[in-house]
Length: 277
Image (cartoon, rainbow, N blue to C red; front, side, top):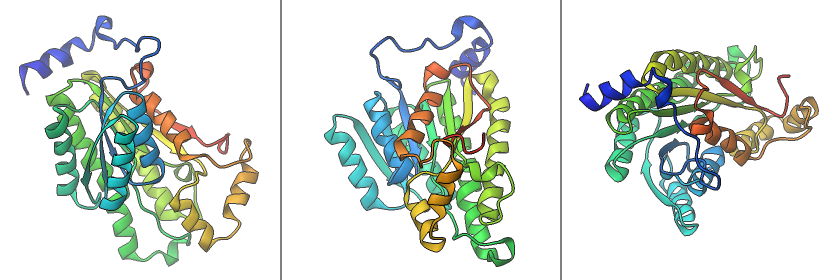
């Protein structure tokens, strides 16, 4: 542990070191370096565009180079700073290398959005193959676990304090007959988020999660193909009577990563149109 980190961690216990919210008109994430997984499409791509608009320099990570390159160029064309690293969340070495790449490119890491995930077609417990369950675990739980460990180390070594947000799901709040493996691992991610929050809070590193409801991404499109009418069924149960746009989830993550949520940690925030109310 270097002296810079020791000073930052010890001073975090005093009220005088609380982050100051950005000045009026400044970007929500101005001056921050952000690492985003699952950034090639959906919520992650929306987050990349939003975080850059809000002033962050972003490093995008996902499996598909073509998607990453397209989103990176889109961010740059809008005036933002973006780089990317091809990264399979099931590969711990690739995850660590992507986080390290962020520090190599920008010299620091302030915030991270662990959004990447995979899913299985809707099926009950007895129809989920063991190999599929193992892969889901590798991406949806071990992936964020590995990423958080690397992110905390990078934040400690550079920014000193920062924030992490994980993407959970309302599908992990209660029993889930159609997505039992997905729901179980998202519930485990909630526990991991809370454990990390109490572990790293004394150092000034906040850890939270967003739990999206029905969100119009490729994942929900795939589920709709297997179970036609699923989106309409979920929308009928949602008080706002609609699905979310990916940017609406990204907006919640941006707030949790920003200094405006400086006293929020250990929270799994439903962003679900009232579905779990």
